[in-house]
Length: 200
Image 1 (cartoon, rainbow, N blue to C red):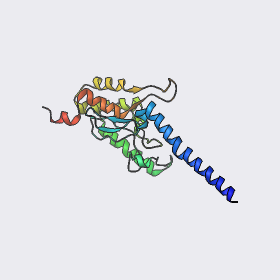
Image 2 (image 1 turned 90 degrees about the horizontal axis):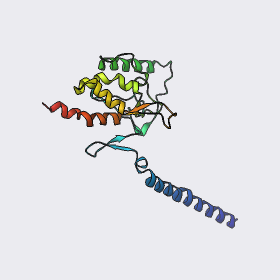
Image 3 (image 1 turned 90 degrees about the vertical axis):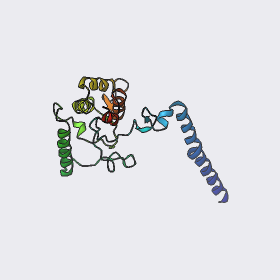
Image 4 (image 1 turned 60 degrees about the vertical axis):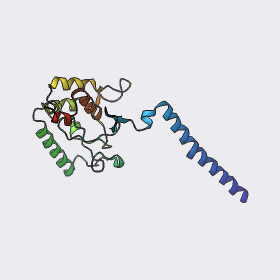
């Protein structure tokens, strides 16, 4: 009986060291060596070197000079510690009311937009943290962004088109635009909205 307990104990210790210590350290080391940016959260920095977010996590933008992301049901909205969807079904009155309120807000904030509001500006992703919108959803917002930045819509459209990401491997997924990266590209091209507000 004692011999069996000792064998079980040694097997447990060896397994814990291999799978709980050596394997995670090896994988972390390989990731840091081969993919350091991704291993550290795909952090995004502004022109000053300040971390302003992650390429993988959506965030809200309320300034009219910035493109807006999809709605979020994660926690109180865009909460990376509470990734989730709302779990409301198509017959949910709460979902209907939320979409109707968002549609009214978007229509009010984008009076010069043409066509119907793109669906991804009204629907949250399953995680609530999707950092992308469709190119159509971004293009729909161009008149508002251009007006707020006091630049021609064609110039904003040019920046947007340069930020459209194609399908992965040429055939997986759909074309998309990372909202954070697009807004940073606008700041690089036209200046930050705060700076423009105080300039003569």
